[in-house]
Image 1: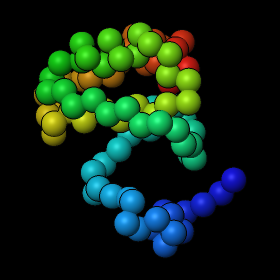
Image 2: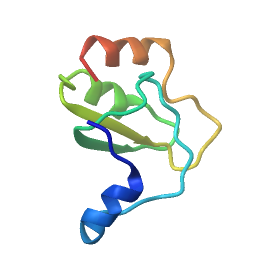
Image 3: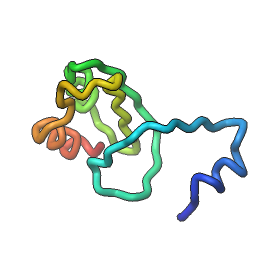
Length: 87
């Protein structure tokens, strides 16, 4: 299945929102879908770790670091936890 953002907005404009934030893809997959779970945290990754301890099968995790560049929120251990729980 292939689609573009423009096609989605053509069909579902009244149901969608978009944002102009920079994202990093840690999963290495270019196209994906699923139930979105969003975590907003400021310089504290404990909620990320808690969320990733549950199964992520069929889900997409979006982490909003509140604009801070002073702390890393995802490192090798959290990335491995996400991988092991199918996020």
